[in-house]
Length: 421
Image 1 (cartoon, one colour):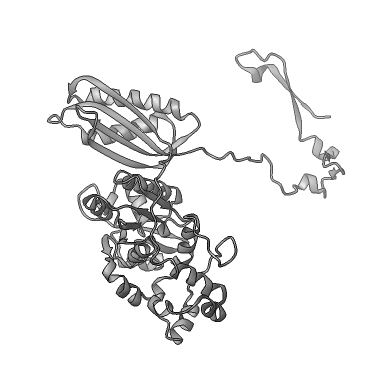
Image 2: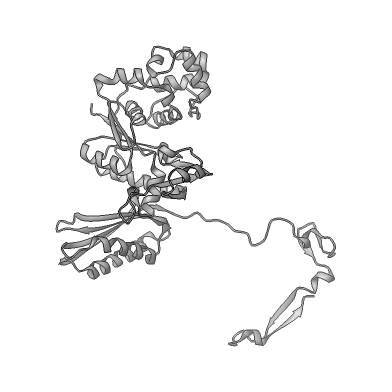
């Protein structure tokens, strides 16, 4: 059976903000390296070397870095872009996204090793390749950012024997959820896997008993682990029992997207002609979007065979469906892409990461009681049905507007104000 690859992107928050701000890969417009540091609640969440460091301390450590707050919507768009990039390599792909995208995994068939290397380098991902999905996931966990760790079949025993239990961490729960999603019937925690993880306290107990690696746990039975560690032991056994289980990955169904294309009658290198064609594509795409909004856009210049010879992609800072905003983004990308020496036979626009904004009900008045509804010195009172009876003192401050001529150019000159009775 073919090997399985697992891709993790622990620096996804920095990657997403970098692409949205035009400093993808940490390279600023001037060509110099500039690190993007993302923080949440006063603590750095990305990149990995600074994770968990207070923001004040991180500023002192990397004063030239770009510090920004975390944007979960940008991370989701960046994650979907990575899934699409892997999908171009192989249709055998499983997207195991997590509430925290930094813990998400992409399982796929690594048929094109050069393409896998390009994705890993661009995203600074951790990639593991092994015979089974669980082994590939563990290999990715131990790989360095921007590196690929391959576990051959002959090396599986040594890899498991030396795999530190502490490295499993919160990944234990993610592995259990993923096994359930793939159709494996687990016995721990009933129908749903609880959010168990190896806390420092739990790991210290394992270490005290001489169980510091996965290899030391393999000889133990399910009942032995459960009697000492309860449901946590059962969950560990569920994962261990599928370490060497092979399975075929399911074909991936891509998410909806909007694609518009326009082909020229003759090849051209005129920027204005390309810009006008892209504007027409944007108008048609926005008509298709209707209430949906896109957070990722890709602009492509086509060759004679309708294949992209130059492309540029961008994560938008917020989901949009307005042609004006998309035109501004497209013009900026095409100005960098179009050159007099490059001929194009057409243009293509792709909008992805589509969403429909949730309707939110707003209140015109505060839900708390005001001085009028609460009563008091003004003499007003509230009846049992919630209506308010105004006192004479308060009532004189409310006026009734009587419109005499609503069609007048200066309507305020043809109206009277009278005290409310």
